[in-house]
Each structure stands twice: as structure tokens, then as C-alpha cells.
Length: 117
Length: 112
Picture: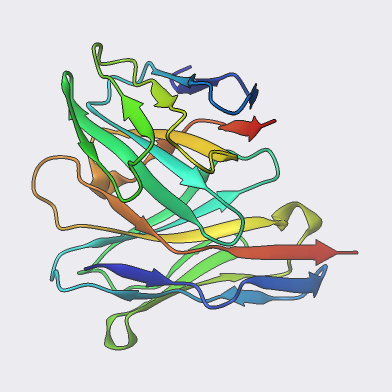
């Protein structure tokens, strides 16, 4: 069975600090996809990134960066120079193997990030 | 703009009543999903549908029912058999799970 663990329940930082959100996953599949979603106070989950299991290259998008390491089954998310608008709950998720049809995402329990002035 | 519309945003239900949550998408996605979110528990899958007139139970289907008569619509009924229905409900759709989901803005259900 697939599993996603986000051990950090809540993180508080002061604006402009860097913060890393951890994600550890378990799967028996050799082909899989990993995701990060942001849930602001409004409630809707916003897609941030998708990464397939064959691409371990780190990715940077503005202040966001992701570190994917298959050796440790981790897909960590770093926000550089955090801002108050980054305050949200962040979810890591894992998809089942590509069967050509839609399957299911397994979500972690989320990390609540609070950025204060 | 394409997207998913959930209604209502807030819903209050008396104990013993059934209530239906609406989910409509205009993204032409085949697959649709219902998740329940409780504080500290992340998202738990209730039901999902990969095609019209077909759906499968998720991890916590007891006390819920769904239908998929149209590609665009996937309503969720919370029945009186659901003992603890107060939660935030999210609907999602996808053309391919490997590309992730598109989510609606959610319905917050409260039993009064």
C-alpha cells in the first residue's frame, strides 16, 4: 500500500526566513508521480508541482524549490524568503502507477505553515 | 474559464437528514473524486468515478452515496447513516492522475 508521511504538523516562521517542508513516501511501484498542493484559507487546493519517479533533478520556481531523492524516498519543498502570503496548509501526494486510466492520489496529512511579520 | 464548481459553500444539516453536495466540472475530465478533510487527518477518499455510470468506494464510503449520470456532474449524498458528517468536503477531477487533480473550492458541512 502507498503511504505519504508529512511529519511536521505545523511550522511557524518569521517573514523572509527560509523553510523546508518534509515529505517521505512509500510505494512498491517503480513508476509513480509525486505532487505538492497548497491549501490557502479559502479551502481550494492549488497544484504546485508534479514530479515523476524517473526525474530526480531538483526544480526551482521563483522562491519555491523541490528536492527529490529516491534513495531516501523523500520529496521536500523549500520556500526561500518566506512571505505572509505563503501561509497555508501544504500537502504532498503520491499517485499509483500509470495504468492508462485515472487512479487515485494518496495524500499526506499536511503541514500548516504560518508566516508572521 | 474551465474549473470545478462546488455548491453550496456552507451547509447545515439536522441530525437524521440526508443532504446532497453538488460538484460540476466543465473540464471534460473523465475521472471525478470526493474527499473528506478533517483537522489533522489530511484528505480521505470517499468515492471516485472513472467514467459515467460507474463509481467505486474509497477508504471511507460508509454513510455516503454518489451517482454519475453525466460526465460533468458527480453529486455526493451524505446520508443519516454517516455518524460524524461534520467536515470539509472537496471534489476533484482529472483527465489523468499522473497530471494531478483539479479541485473545487469545497463545501463545509455542519450538523446542528
